[in-house]
Length: 284
Image (cartoon, rainbow, N blue to C red; front, side, top):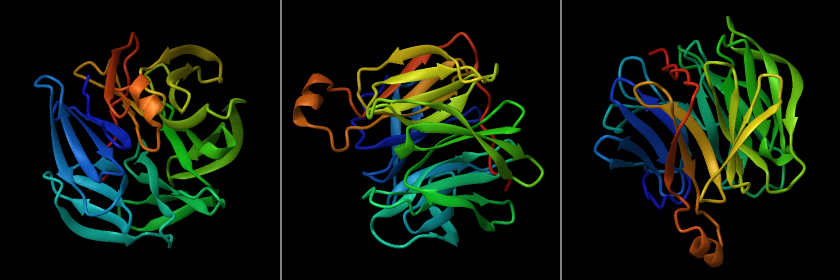
């Protein structure tokens, strides 16, 4: 779809207003705008690593940068820092994040050294207050919500397990954690995810080279291999929300692997029989 050669592509988000897909490259810090009709990609450089972002209702973006959470205008220009990063040290940064159905931004952090479970998950409310939901995470990932917003999916990638939570929509609080699905192979690492209109859960398996689709009960429904070993996240887009976009990574991959899989770091797309759900925008 797009041979982006991203170092660490992540966080695809479809904008129906712009008829475009926004995504980030974490390690070559940038917010990107991909126009599928023109097959062009506009790069908006960032000053530090950008773990994730969300669209705002009015215009522009909420950006989870290395040093904190920022508001940016529609051109990706930083306007206001609304929260300092709730972690210290070069080993930590924000990671997977997206809005719940009520337009609150949930964002997790990760320990890039992977030597301690000292990351967490936070919620940015509409009043721009940042609240920690829980800690003891190594790599926060796999956020998604059921169509009615009452079930939240989340993973600590290092555990190879996705959990579900009952989600209190009035307060944005996840409770009653339950195991949803897990994998045995070390290379099947749950990364970014989304949910379709039927409530099926679509998940990228980092180093597993594929997207998997699970029913709301955790049953494996389908697998979709990719010409890249490290898919990072998937998102529905297109005018009918039946195009699944997938970001991938080439960060840390060997020369031999990149020779075998030269499209690593690319943006891929496939048509699906079931449409997705429009991603909520942050409430300001």
